[in-house]
Amino acid sequence: MTSTSAARRAYDGPALFSFGFRPFFLFGALWSALVVPLWLCSYFHGGSAALTREWHIHEMIFGFLGAVIAGFLTTAVPNWTGRMPVIGAPLGGLVALWVLGRLAMLYQGVLGPFAAVADSLFLLAFAAVIWREVLAGRNWRNLPVCGLVTLFAFANVAYHLPRGVSGEVGMRLALGAASVLIAQIGGRIVPSFTRNWMKARAMEPGPAPFGTVDRAALGLSGLGGALWVAMPQSRLTGAVLALAGIAHLARLARWRGWRAAAEPLVWILHLGYGWLGVGMLLLGGSALAPVLVPRSAGVHALTAGAVGVMTLAVMTRATRGHTGRPLAAGGATLAIYLAINAAAILRVAAPFTGVAQSFWLSASGFVWSLAFGGFAVAYGPMLTLPRPRPA
Image 1 (cartoon, rainbow, N blue to C red):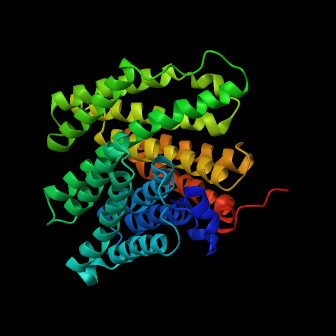
Image 2 (cartoon, helix red, strand yellow):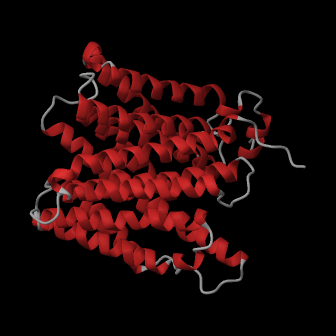
């Protein structure tokens, strides 16, 4: 069998399609940088009837986040399984389905039900690819990842069902699946990268090994996500989500991320995971005390915070590592990290500001676009050009 690395060495097509992360990280970042200002302009000043709040929600979850998940997993799964990577024409086909979905959602008023079919194809095809690779590679450890990707794809289908409850259920199911995916994958890479960084500097003790706290955080996240999908305003749901948030923050503390404060590529992973704990705490608080904690604060701590920060953390590190660049953050990368955290803070704070909310929404959208637009500018050449040859 041809190894993953040998298959990539043998590939002689465009560099953009030599790794799954290349097109999906680049196009996902560009789309994210465009969607927010387009929706804000439509929301505050009027504009295209297609750029609704529902379109904004859908495109940020299933368009942007779907692309980043695809970029990460099409790159990671071959390393997990030792099988041939999805590159070249097959990868180009997946990207084309993603682009088709974005166009379909822009013109859904014209296409009608065909837009839902066109948009659903990408995530369903992507889930099928991941299942095929994991099963063929007998990589049983990652079957939960396959399940979460499938839930994410089904959530998109649910979102397109006749309007009403289905759209909200689809959004909650997708965000719940994404949160558990961050908890599961983040629980591997955050302590692993932190441990490697500390080991290279002979720093002890490193992150604590997987244990009871980790199991509790994952279990409570799954249960809390399921309850949130079924009964989002229940006090039981609020209590479980709040406990999940506390468990994630306790888990994060066991990884000793403050000891890696000298390297932005490491501490940004801890910040991203920290937003997951804060998001679940706020979401639980909105069910337990809705007068004090707006629901949107918890939702956006998960989306702008956990999703936004963790995606950029993974995108920058994976891009640098897989394209042969040093694993160290320069000024542009640090600026991207500061911008995305500022966007998350402003977006979470906005519902608490009353009449000034529109200003903070706009400010958050502006720095969000700076973060992802900045990634596209700074990392675009790395993603589109061949890996530098060793000197």
